[in-house]
Amino acid sequence: MGSGDASTCAGLNAYQSPQQLVQIKQAIRRGTYVEPETTFPMRFGSHNGSLVLDEFGIRTGQVVMDREKWFRHPKYPFIGCHVDGVTVHKGIPAVVEAKTTRQKWDELPAGIIAQVQQQLACTGYELAFVPVMRFGSEPEIFEVEADPMYQDFLCEKVADIWQHVLNETLPPPMTLDDLKDRYPEDEGENQMATQETLEIAEKLYWIKDAIAKAKDQQAVLEMAIKGEMQEAATLISEDGEILATWKSSKPRATFNSKKLKAECPEIYEQFLEIGKPARTFRLKVNP
Image (cartoon, rainbow, N blue to C red; front, side):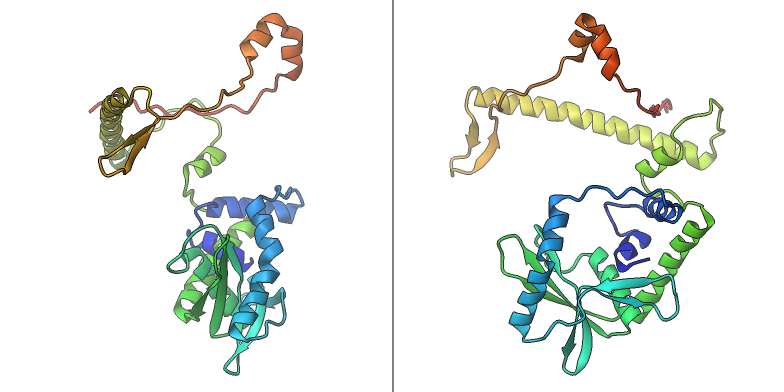
């Protein structure tokens, strides 16, 4: 379990749930995992990691050594990390973790802090530097001090996830996608609702009702603004502030599958692919 898994194990990763991480690790152990295609931000970060480390050295005067060095946790053999580099600050070794991003951070996101704290736990170092390069902006350097209590918390979370990997079980679902993946089809049975679930269903009803009313109000207000704009592309205030835009987009090309099915059914059937069944949730309660 690497340091990049720490944020997911702690429930801090907005792009991956613990269940998804467990499924990936289980697939790797079974030899069935297929590496997904990389994205441009991923390739950009990987390509420019060395540049960020070099710039860190230039700006701090500190030499970055042991790039991509592997460390294993002294207590948990299944926890490890690759550090981007190691430097020496005031005679003491420190981790250097390079980052690239489009976002503006006043402070490091919790997920990165979790990653760096796991690196500090594995290395035994007391300090980490996180140089961050934003697209077209000057690099900024953050510092993270070791937090033993937080490191213990992270290691417990990682250990719990690792146990699910070994046992071929799944952790509790945390997202709707987790539930869809875990229960892709219904078995046609009835489930008796508990009093707590009944109260949740009634609360959901009122929330959906409030959202529907808000959308109706949104449509009325939007119509009023568009009626004022007419053919204008931009609505501005007396001070010149842009209040809204209503611009024409380029024509969008679409594929008429119904026409193809009607006029060329043989070709349509040849390229027709049947997907997996999908479950549709409809709230029936009406307090």
